[in-house]
Image (cartoon, rainbow, N blue to C red; front, side, top):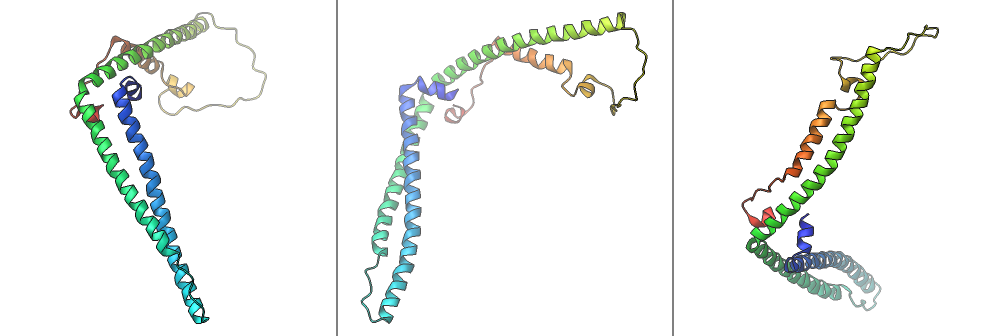
Length: 209
């Protein structure tokens, strides 16, 4: 829901895009630093072994590869540090915007919350009506069975399996589903969301948003 609010505020959308892009760049730069650290360590081992082998064979040692990688590593580490500082600055700009526009953003969230509550209430109302019709048919069938039971048939078959219910006999124990009142109570609560609830303001506009 907050993402939908961001799309309606161009300045905030730009700030969020900047932060997201810097997070991506910083993550890539950090991964490059880690890769160069590993490669530089491997290059050092290779250079030392190659130099030792060349000297033992009275040959000129090959040019080491570690210094070039160390130079790349220094540049990559600096780039990652600059990106981290840029990211912190961008996050500060976003925090200031959220703080300065806290009331406007909260009002938009309240409106979106109320609209969503209406949609939930409408769907729940339809489901509640269907559930009541379902239970009405169930009650009518039960009353018909009680008032006009079907004639008993002669039992000519073998013994049938028996289900044992431990504890109190309830609809939930027999059917395995939630109790009838529980379902209706839940749907009635969802229907009540259409009355228009309010999102309470929370201290710390940035975090609340």
